[in-house]
Length: 256
Ligand SMILES: N[C@@H](CCC(=O)N[C@@H](CSS)C(=O)NCC(=O)O)C(=O)O
Ligand SMILES: [Fe+2]
Image (tube, rainbow, N blue to C red; front, side, top):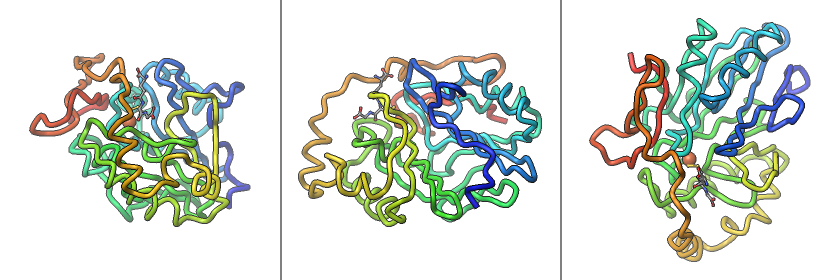
């Protein structure tokens, strides 16, 4: 199956699907035959680049999907919808956010002969999703599992216990050679595997008790854009959680 994927671009310098300010990876997947495509975690500032690549490759972008309600950047899904009519924004129902398609555990996003299957992997936020290619050769883990790391758990309903369970039950149960594509990397790494992270991840190889201690003492500065809200060219950013429990997480897709 994977051989007929047209392209999957993880921080490729030649393709440049990377956003340097927030160190975000955006992934484009497509089926060669049907030309149907999905983009995962686009960033607002890079949406024109992503749309140009989709057009250049003659693809039809069906979905612009978010792994979670991002706190460090504004999603590009709203702008991609405008640039590529027919494209629909996606996020998990559990995020409490708005998008054209609200999905949850077990739902699939089909593109041509392929599909991304949805696994709920909360803990970094309670709406985090991991998208798994239907042949289980690739998993897009968002901020749940990073390369030799994991998403922080100190805002957006974060919970180290929940994250530990998510990674062990929803990601480490995938085949060992399944490739891991995270939403960010701050050290220049681009890809890992389930087996590598299962055995070498310095946080997730700990006991749950030790993991919780580490996560509760990370003492990281808040992302620079976490407090940002506003109107971005006809579509809005807003707190990602109804009821105001979310500390300024950014959203960028059209609400209606
Ligand atoms: N320095 C960056 C923000 C870095 C950060 O907090 N990253 C998040 C993922 S984005 S919500 C995270 O979970 N990091 C985990 C870690 O161990 O670093 C900025 O200013 O935007
Ligand atoms: Fe995040």
